Length: 79
Image (cartoon, rainbow, N blue to C red; front, side, top):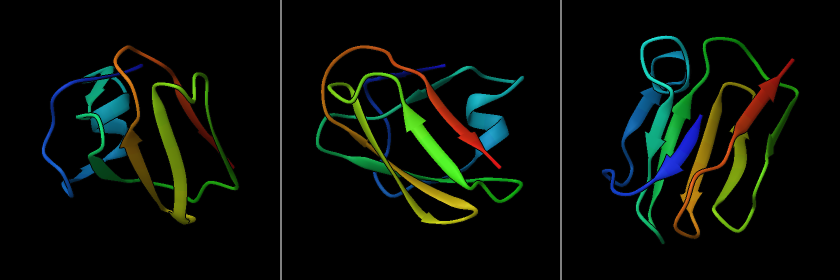
């Protein structure tokens, strides 16, 4: 899974479509964000490299991923 540039701000994606089997890369522009809808509630979320992306849980089923820097990182959401 990775974060790279560019993407459309404020676009809502299905988490497994964006990060799962059909595609392993979610692209986000620096200083832009994208909401990601989860198919199941998550109790915890984490990003491997916070210098690349910031991830906030808006609700148990929705994340906001903000592009912070250039590169790739991993995001995990667990129940």
